[in-house]
Image (tube, rainbow, N blue to C red):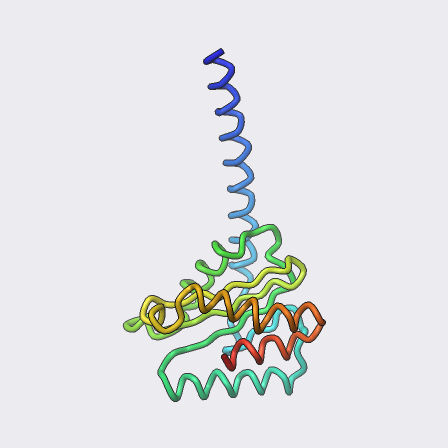
Length: 160
């Protein structure tokens, strides 16, 4: 009996370990391909140039007023990766915010996966805690996205 339980536990560990490795590998491949072009990075090509300009201006205003950097990344898909893990890695790789102050914010959206995340640098966590980040996604971004209004959702979240 104990041998069967041990075998079952080992099998589950292998299955979940392989799945987790595959997710990480998929996310790492996507991460390696992405290069920032500005504060607004619409890799899903959902926004018009005017929409991107509007969001860029808001990010610039925020940086000038507070010193914090807000980056927005819109992807078609995470290609099998997990949004939490991918967001954290992207935040670090791109060095969002000032390194000495760790004052960056990343708004990451994966359209086909229907996932979004706000990654916050440690210096801004008192101002933008996880609960508030979740409310911004649930009250500002997701309702607009569900209606197909991607720019309105991003603008509402960025202006919050």
